Length: 268
Image 1 (tube, rainbow, N blue to C red):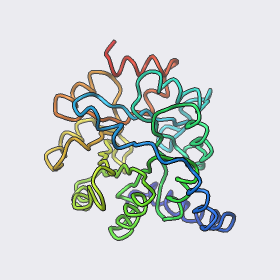
Image 2: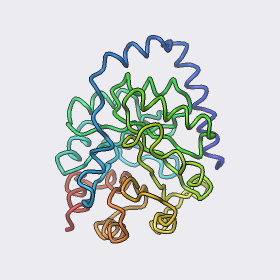
Image 3: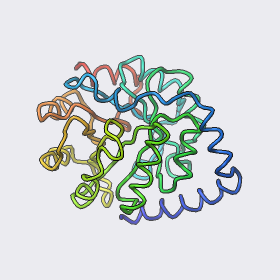
Image 4: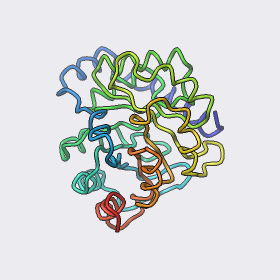
């Protein structure tokens, strides 16, 4: 685990402890049970099978880039993405490092019809219930943040709550760790994300997905994340059989995020 990731996880443990004191788990479970059923994030990304499907990300800032977008309106951005053809929305909810907020999820869900992924550093079952109570349809699980027993527990819990999971890896060791658990405990709930950003140097390399592709048993559930900027980047991935991408920082830097996404999907 990189130094920055280790610090984020340490801070997240403190945040979870504070959240548990203010909102007990039983209260969260009751709120989660009151939510409408989750939208099917897995299906939105995998159907149709051989067409580019984009998870478009709502992100104000990041540790590597600092402030990305000053005129930040999460609902307007998500609406523009959905109108431009996004298959799903990814919403950063971490406050300290990404200037996100959990409240963004419900606001975005009220404005768009596509599924919404809560992108955060999920390390505790409390956060999975918290995500569902907030209306999230899917959660991100980062293999670099989780030992194998905890990862399995979180996969089971997310599935019990009928939420999809985007299970993210960067290095080979973590890909090997998660491979046996893809499709567990039930098929059609978990997607595999390969993060092209090196968590030690924070640099991105699109070729990283292509280098690890041969180790992926089912490319139809693979999502390439980070470092994707153009239609040509998407075409390069599609030519290799990768039709699902997550794009955030590039789109967030564009004056018209909807136009930028349409150009990425369809070509200029």
